[in-house]
Image 1 (cartoon, one colour):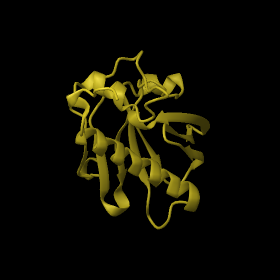
Image 2: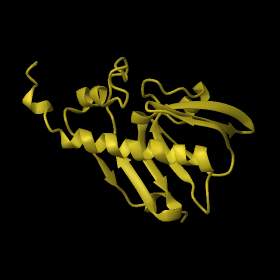
Image 3: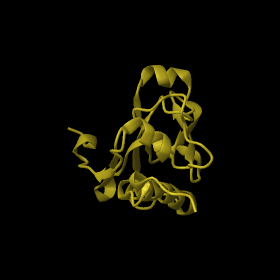
Image 4: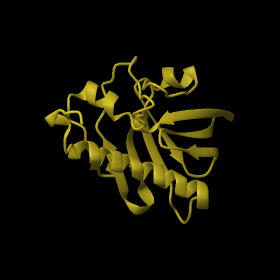
Length: 162
């Protein structure tokens, strides 16, 4: 049996981060399986430069750093797995396919039930993305963030119309 680094044993922060990202994955899967019911809809903010994010170049230029999308009325071909979610949205009546790794998400909110999760921003090394042995990307994030990895519940006030 190999000896494990004591700093990697019982990392509750990593466990919580994986569990909270699992909430995002499961929520998207529920929409795939059952559609959006009642007034449910999602605001999803993600890092546009995160490794594995695939969006059109003009969107990266328009939203350097972070971008928020809304899944409510007009979205198509929604898919999710343990690494990412994919969706087709229209921008100026042009359908665009977006691929967003789950670790790229910084905020996930469903304002209809006053629910939101905020993930710590990732100052990542652009060449070091999620690998096959680390589907949630937490190893890459951990290298970049030096151990301060956690999710937290946030107020929805930032999404409210004023």
